Image (cartoon, rainbow, N blue to C red; front, side, top):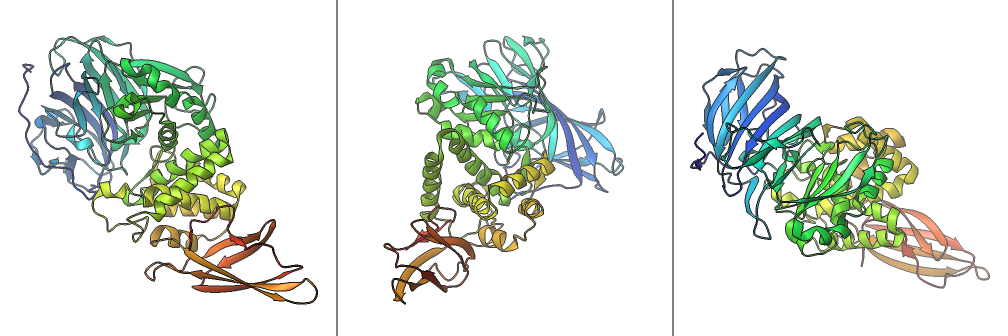
Length: 539
């Protein structure tokens, strides 16, 4: 390498829909990346240990926009085809169920996925930003959430910078060899390793002038991936020097969040937890053990503690237990929305939690995607799945399930689901079956109407009193489901309450009439679901 910037070549773009070659499985990525302090280009080398799962004669890696310098299989250079966002080579000599090692060397200016440029303070930085299938722009990979692998990183970065990545740091940064890949600037080499499998969209590095602050230790004795002698997880935040003080309020309770989720869900799944100011396009991106946050939000001094709780909850749901199809995104975003709010119920009280759930409900009522179901395979643009169905409505689905099952069974089911599928990829059916196994109840009706059907119930209410002997009488309650006809008639187990006098009802018709005996006429109208367990709009 001569250290000069190579011209990028366009090899295609990330598809809107998912593509997944199920015949091969990535087991481990060994990634080496060379970057400079002013250069916009990178040089990379990746060795991927893979397994042929069946009679699959072709290896396909997702890769786009950078120059491929060579491909080798088991140490021998091979011919390959590189076009339309794919590196393809013959695998016919590899027998089914056998492992092989593919190596790719490459360089260029990434079109996306790895963001190189000036940060909010005008200083150069390099951050990966993968979601949903943008890993291919900087790393040859199986760029699909269902394929999980362990990964190790070797990053050659400017000596005054710090480098963060998934997993745990395995070296004291040392002087980079002169012949190392990448721009020939004065650099140090950092190494990181992930000991548990993660999806490619979670594989990240970040490099910039940053300050590191430790929040505390968490999940002590309950973190099997921890590499510390004490078994704890170190919770830190990495921010630009100019923003250290501004960031403190947002990240101060990070260790408490980890402890809460560990106690509520299960063991913390990764080696550490770093909260990192970065150039991600999102408010927060939940990369496994290295969460990236919007540099603008942190630099503004705004407290983003709600985002922090959401992203930390993702370490369990989304990162450790991952949806195997993006159309089941609610298994990540709905769970993070709800459990992120549950932390504040635990830490700040029920009223705080109710306000957060009400804010979510209002977002659903105003949503532009109410005519679509949560699990929506007809939506082909993956970015359009980042909508109110998968976030607040997904969170409300969990809240309603909690209301139906009760706290004991709900949280027992959550723990069982997490325990069964840690470091695996799942679909909504997997979650449903876990909750059914724990509760002993069929939940087909619940998951069908709330995840596979559009909309939500819109209710109208009427009372009529018929006096009997003395002060006693019959109260006739009529409840209509008035939502549009293309939405389902919902089955709603709930209650109607007159002050402290509550009567159970199950609403499952367009018009439902109930009659209740009272010793005296209630002095006010009844309220449907006064404790707010049902996603609804009262008209």
